[in-house]
Length: 215
Image (tube, rainbow, N blue to C red; front, side, top):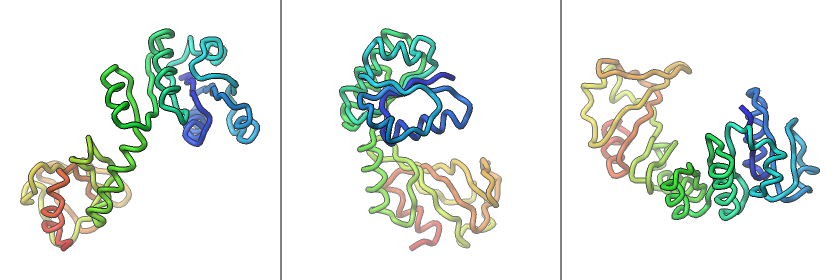
């Protein structure tokens, strides 16, 4: 792919580096020339200008881009740039970093996938505070549903998935055993030490901890 990235801060630099490492071409646009002098790090084009400026985006190869990532530190710049990339240049995949969770949900409805760092971080931190023994890898919505990682204890060793008296709204998504991920069926047997990845209603976590003998 060819990917145009708006913003060369920590997020933009990381994305650019990972894309190049995986064989993709990148072009980065940032309003500050200083960041390019301070952080070189990539082989792709580095252009100074506004991330939503038409001429600058054309120089970055927006017309042939497979994806555009808006990753500046400003919500307004990211949204404007994302809309320009999608609506003016027809980029197939456009994603934006948005700090304000309310704005993020609005633009999701406009068809622009967003990542709200504030919402994601707050939901995850809240889950860790409320249930420190059940590590939360992902939170859905406002944290009502979590994807948690828990280690199978002796309390469930040798039991089949279907034999477990599961709390409400719970699903074992996968398990990790000996460094390999598994998709468990109802008849699979759980072993002590398995890392279980479970989608669960946050209010049901105390029941899960009781089931696993974690209380």
